[in-house]
Image 1: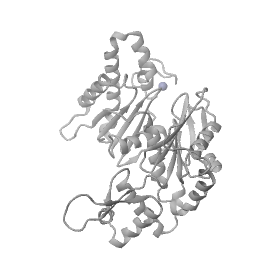
Image 2: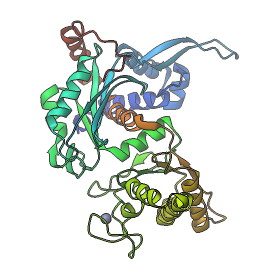
Image 3: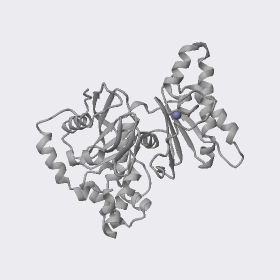
Image 4: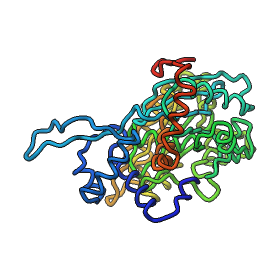
Length: 394
Ligand SMILES: [Zn+2]
């Protein structure tokens, strides 16, 4: 990855300080230079230098004087500058549409593009390129990077090893995007990005599990604030783990996979055929998931479990019985029960989480890339293509 090319110690230190300061303020916190210095462990002079560079590069802005009344001199507060840069974020997880957004440095969506695609299971790279082109044409700000969230297994070089949903095998998505747009690009697994979004904008902590129930069933796990990828980058691919050997036949050929029992199409079909049993069908589904996850939750001593899915499926019946099952299986006097909740971030979760991944990977690379790149872009493309970035267009 590009940041590993940082050569010498001083630049490593510099990068680490920039990340630490940004992390303290992202997305919407405010602190004085003195407080940032204390928290990062830097002298007055050193923190002023770091903050000065970040303000010059439009990563931070001064927001005025501290409004808290207290002793001593009031100090100038700093916050993330939402207007300096834009991130292009692409969500390839929906079945018949590709969604993209322009995101600001605080993780807020400021513009959108959607392209419908008729052939689910055969998504053309050209369409993804077209979407990025449109998003780039909507802003006159420099672009920090592009991020693409893919339903499937992705390696750290941004190669999509396998995505059944998109019909892709070994697609070097990062390389293709960077060759075409000359903008650093980050490609990630979609469920991992949903977890990242939930950690920053929702209810997850540094030790969390995120479960996504949709066409399939996927998971993501974060331990000590780091997403677990696994040896073959397939951590969280739990959909085809057998939980009931006598269960229904799965598309993969086995019986009783988690996905065969808990996917939204399967549950909807059951509810449609026995509408009067809706509550018990969903309670049974929640119980199965609780049973399947109890070992992982206690093995890793997680503090949050967030479940994402359509509200008519992942509702009170589902969550309530999942909670009961987890409690029955893992409660002990030496362990606090994890907080289990329905994820309430809605459809933008993956787009915003993917933008966070871009920010986290590229925030310290700006001085290498230079603002010139942004300025060139903004004068050559921005002026004649003046869209209101706040205006959704689809
Ligand atoms: Zn299966």
